[in-house]
Amino acid sequence: MVTAMKISINADMGESFGAYKLGDDGAVMPHISSANIACGMHAGDPVVMYRTVGLALEHGVSIGAHPGFSDLQGFGRRHITMDPSEIEYLVTYQIGALQALSASHGARVDFVKPHGALNNIAHHTGEVADAIARGIRAAGRDLIFVANCLSEMTRAAGEAGLPVAHEAYADRHYFPDGQLMPRSKNSAVIRDPELSAKRTVVMAQEQCLVAIDGTRISTPVDTFCIHADEPSAAAVARQVRAALVDAGISVAPVTGRN
Image (cartoon, rainbow, N blue to C red; front, top):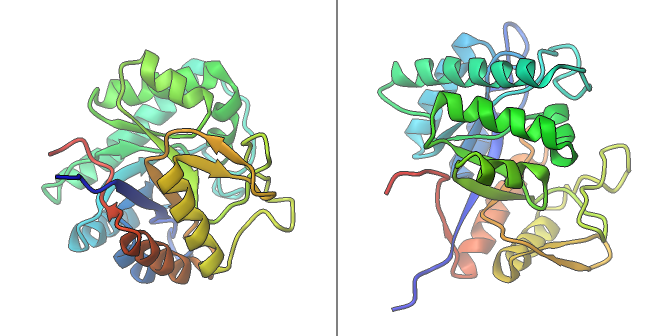
């Protein structure tokens, strides 16, 4: 008996805070399998976090912490210089907040994915990736580190003894060397649902990244990210999920539970 390939679709959720609404979580959540929930530093607040956990549970979506720099004004996309120990404790702190609010629902946090500038820096910088891994491990040794494919974070997760899920992007272009194209490039974000879906199926089936010129870069791929702050997010998520299912690929949550 052949076991179907399992792939997760994740998206950043719970990014509203106070009087400010960002994204349309209600439209995106039904089409994903794992939610990266903002933990109050770059976005989100306690009420939004609590409600987002509830929405994830309603749709059978696994819960992940999405820690970032303390940067509401910059949405966590600005580089803040911090010592490794400061990054470690910042990560543990944010995971702990989401763990407590999840526990109030009788739920648990399954994985952790760094946000924005923190994620971008850790992709290339070993000491930052190691600090994040230590911060995750302090919050729970069974927490899955969702880490960019071909990054320092995948190495750091392994060395810290953490389970890792290799992440590719369904709605972002890559350079031929496997590096993510920065948002400053006009073609960086893919807003065409059909193009996103086609690329995602290829990357899942061939276990590779697909660059903007068609180059394939071999790597394990376990989960695909869709940016929920894009107006096209719900349509992209819907079509990506349908395309994976049509290709015989099971869409499953990022979770360490059987």
